[in-house]
Length: 554
Image (tube, rainbow, N blue to C red; front, top):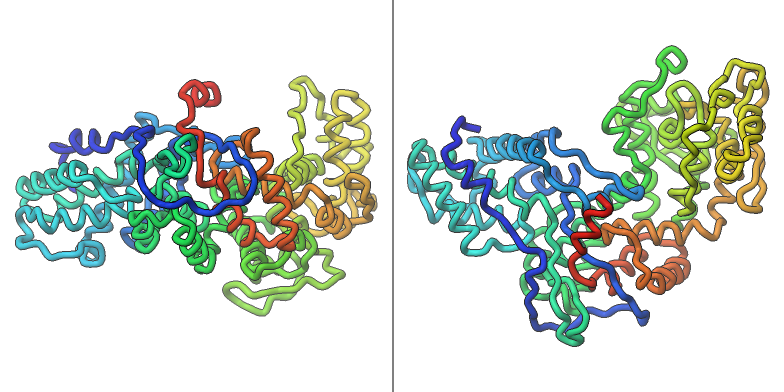
């Protein structure tokens, strides 16, 4: 970006908004299940780093390298999707966004790519052309703001472009500043959800058609709405039964749904730790483990999930299927042959490989372990909290973990150390819930490689999951598949992800309905997503979240 700051203060002050500016409109209501719903509030939801990048790529070009130095995502109640509705932009964070916007604008409008995003040719390269600048601002701004710009918003940015072009004698330098003003606006950085009275029931608030477009697109594709969805939104189609259903089917049948599914499960499983290099291991103990292996392990699990769910297979079977994808590097870690020298290939683990289901993947076992040893407690806690939606209390601050951490003492296996640890009454309650699950996975070490012994002692992987006994990790996968809480937990997690908040008391009946529909569909996630987005909980609201509530939880 060129070194000029004469209009930057004007750039930064453009784009204020009022969330609760509610106006009525005509149009019939979309269909919803015959269940009473008292939906929760809406709030500003700051784009996650992935949404920020994808929105830029889909609007301005895949060639753009989007700087990663922006405000970090906020993970709250187990999801970045929930934390996004509490995230703000700090003064230092705004400087990072401004720097990122400058880098993006320069790449988008360089000589090699400007014709792809600017829908016109300027009359002069060395002076302003307000007509062409307006065409660009309105086109790019519509995709980035996820709605058409108001006349005032467009005029302000056209004026910025004109002033800069005439001062710098460069038309495209003016467009860069105009684009920066769009990319640093709250209307881009935050998903602004607006509600309006329902014409058929003025006592009820519904999201506007334009707000519905953003909700749909970021849930199902994790990016800004495309032109077809924007056109439907601006026509008011997304608050009508047929219009909403038509767009939902289009989004669900698109290859872009794979991105949405990846994003949901990556958030749920906290796989961003792999991206940030936080899953570290002791190189002396695990020389095969590298950052590249970690990234491929994460990708293996996400590819497995996407392939399974986009083929409309039973969600529960993810925890028992031997089908997956491997690279040659992963094949070394799994100790199985991989034919493809570079890239991925489908792979079905043999029965004696003991790799049935997601819980046997390197990604899961490496993520929920310590740098130098496995952790039955962390693995069990993940299953209880993330897969079964059961709360495990945080351990007291004064608990002595020395017995568990002493892997070279008299207690040779994790089972022996944990059994000694839980003689403390303060520890027994939680460990009784987590450890029988995690101990079934002790046949996988801290990076997920198979082992039969620990410190020369055979590993006992038997256990019990709420009354279902098993002998090993494969048995645990089957017990988890059949657990009555597995399906309802995904329903709750997906609903929280979609709404960007916790489930409200008035939505419990809807969740019960969604549980029933999920089971009737034989646990097909595509069908669950359809039911969620067509529900009143997704389309209606109690209004903006109270400022006091946001302050109490921040």
